[in-house]
Image 1 (spheres, rainbow, N blue to C red):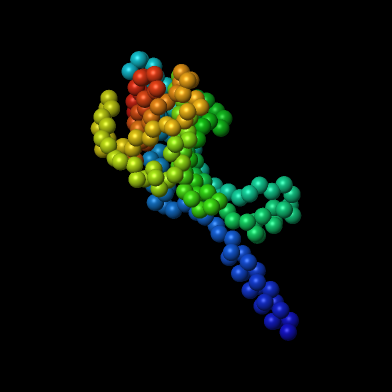
Image 2 (cartoon, rainbow, N blue to C red):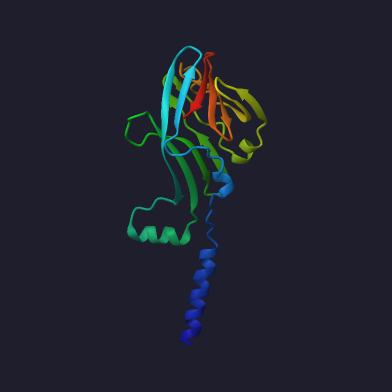
Length: 199
């Protein structure tokens, strides 16, 4: 009888835990990241402005609902689903600290996959809100772009639909993203055009 009870308890816990999905990114999702730690991105505008970012880290992280005590954390880990994020982080040269996540790929608590870009350089900022659906992002038409140094034939154009900050002088209207290279350029709403080289 004791063995039967133990079996039933284990079976119940197994079934209970299996009802809580754990969403994860796939290797195919992670291939969207073209950067390595130490890559240096040099941004140059057609007005003679320039700025530099250095990729200082990337990290993959399992995400859960926040919990605020030992007991609630145990309950959350046993009963709530988990999801995952991948972050590529950049700093200015010789700058220390948390920097910016210039690329974020996530699978959300509902299983949906998202992608976000973060770009803040001198006199230019991408107000991210238009590229969150990963499936939609992957279905964007591919174009060819020639920069000062290279021609890229795998470029996606992401157009900002952010209306809140369009009046700002640093507003980036669209970015050009190469699947093999990463950022290759962007245009500001004021007409300034920027290109990117990677070292």
